[in-house]
Image (cartoon, rainbow, N blue to C red; front, side, top):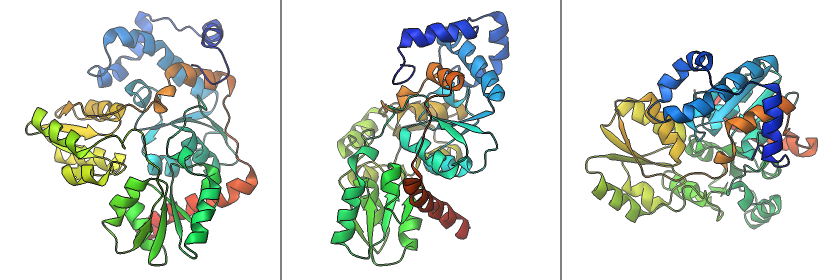
Length: 352
């Protein structure tokens, strides 16, 4: 779908009225360098469809004074074709504070767009499809957080950025998978409420002396992986290194060769350069890293995120064309939520 409210056929017809979306020798030539980066991930017959959209988006974002931020889970045609900045949640949160453009198009899920808006209240923040949600973000409410605070008086609340602004607003400090341990060890007290991902919290608890109170939330991409899956992957791919995201259950993390955030996994592959690797995470991320490390053979052991896949080139173009769908956060929520995110970012500044 183009977005949550406009019929696909109507949107496509309107885009065709305003932009030449046909594939031509000129389009092929203009996008040749981009295609060279992804030719192992995208068949040439598909590129003929993507290339006109990519060329149009890149021209239109300049006209609209827009910048495109894309998460590592976005498809290669977005990640390499139109994104100005790419990264994990923490990288995008920090990058959002640096952009000079007046419009931010967030190619990710809804909480990421909210975070960009929190950090850029004066800018226009767009998400191509507001239905791009997150199982973690929907697993907890502000009322749930307040109930936990009442049960553990004085315990600081460390909240994963994979949450709504409403939840961030009743939080002491946010974290991502790349800085969770640093944040937990850095807050005061021997007991820490860490929400909402139970597996990230459990995996962090193994590395800290503090007591971690968890919430029963999980990422639908990572929670289904099991230790048996890792055993089967090792049997199927002898000699391959297997790496996983800390949103996976602890028995999975114990069974793999390396565990880290999306940026941590990417850096590990680029540094270690294993002959063969299986990335136990979202499939498009494997495709994107494979395009950057052609000397490494990538083997499948991943899941697709249905929410991330709601974002596509067509609705990115529609978003730029129409200025929709705009993210807004009421200031009574935005103020305290912004403070929780900024405390997370400042943690990193203090420790380096």
